[in-house]
Length: 105
Image (cartoon, rainbow, N blue to C red):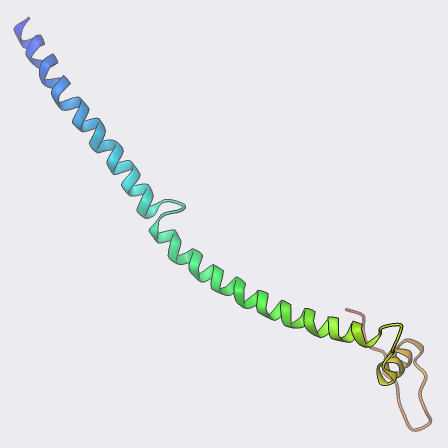
């Protein structure tokens, strides 16, 4: 009986700190090696840098397309661009020119 009381008393004094240590270890491990931990943070930074590079190239392509569209504006069409588009669509050439159709992308 006395042994049981002593074990019960000792278990109560050891259990609470042990549970607290286990919780701290769990969150510490998750903070370092988890999906959003320090180790994943460096990988996320490299992925972000690659995505920013892709974004800048896409923005430059978009600006080029917007400029080309602005040249095809109905109020003031650029003559050279109009001729280029017409020749590409109609495949009409002069006597000394050769038109090679391109594959559509």
